[in-house]
Length: 330
Length: 300
Image 1 (cartoon, chains in turn yellow, red):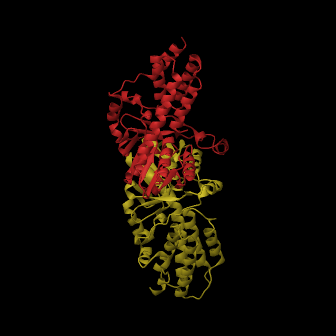
Image 2: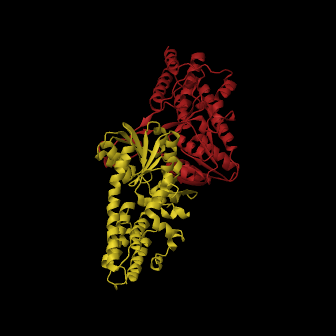
Image 3: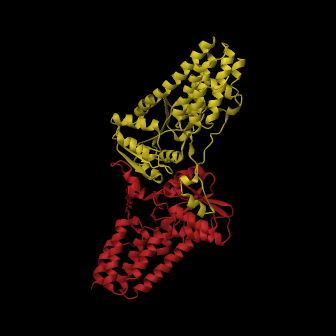
């Protein structure tokens, strides 16, 4: 039994970051598992099929070990396999069906989030957003279509200025938007009615891992009694955090901040470039998911309801040690 | 340009125009208009212009060069003394966080190095303007272990920090500090982590106008503070940016003002003013009136 080429092509595209963004990675992985099931040509033995699928799942998991959406997509599909019974054909269609269902749900999720999120925006609002998040931009655009948005402040988001992407997208939808430097968020906060931001990962306690700067924006909002909403699909919730795993924070190349020559000229200066920070749940008023608007402390609800099977596995040990072969023993 | 650099430049410009009353009156008025228009919260220059005006109205034009020299020395000493007092709060193995690139702030770091204190510093790059890069270069030359981070990363690293020490553009009567934009966010983040905040604030930065309830109006800039023409041309035509240049840090987020008269709570400003001037509130004429009278006197 070997991994089909179709699966490997997707896996390598995830590894090389040709496929990037939490949503796209998740959908690609689900699609790859569906393809793997289609391509199975082994004996008509359910145990062998399960083993084959597990091998494909583990391969996909290895392509981007830190992205939370990837294992969530893989576990979603593998959960359907575990719950299914019958001969290989029946198991195969369970996997294909789960793969398609994940993709559809993920695409539907954005639409639902934009609706639920827009409902939370008050009339005549000034909204502040940070970085570029597809989910928050769709919430803002939807709220603007409903006539609720007076103005948007979009932070530049150093070092890579993703705020310019946000500003451009909002302008394309005629949303009035002004860019501000990241340092100006407390200055501007007294004019702001609501903060809408995205998330990279959400931990089991409701802490939100997102672009660096998010946590001090949430702090400034909290100080000014401005509400903070996080727009995030459920596959951004991290089951691993339930067993105390820390969400690793990536430090990227310092040349994103200053040129190489500057760094080489300053031997006593170390340029530190963390990409994400952690916003504690007490600074977040609600997380807007496709399953509804929840308080951050109820993140566990999404994890238990949607990731129950994963949790069983995870309690046995760290994620990298989870043996999907356990499937065979049940 | 930091507030004290700006102040010293104003003194230099006045000093190089002391040959005759008429040209002095011209440059005096020109500087006044410039400050009002481009640097309205540079209280150091406003205070300087007021002191110079008072001198001329009381003593005439004679001895103006010596008076300006005396003022310069007084400001120099105040800046150094405030820096030294702030430096006293730093002990071995302290980790500091700061931003921008003030003259008195640099002097404090120099004092610490001269005294052989072991410390390291997180420096925010301080957009717009990126003065943090210049401060990091200065610290590099002093041999201080320095971490350069983006403004957004202040809260990420605050847990590692023992003290925040910053400069100021102006001090209001209630102890509020007007500083480079981002100062108030940095102080809020420090406060949340129970990290102490000290502001180096020689008294020439005190805004006497605020004694009478005047509000300081903070200037703002546009996209040109954030990017060059080339990047702007790649953005949509209706792209707009709002760039505040200063912000106000409320006194409750500040643990101490380091002045040439010592370190005290920001709320204690009235007590210090009373000590220094013997009265509170002190007599403060409207600068515009002074300027007009000076022009009148000098053109006679």
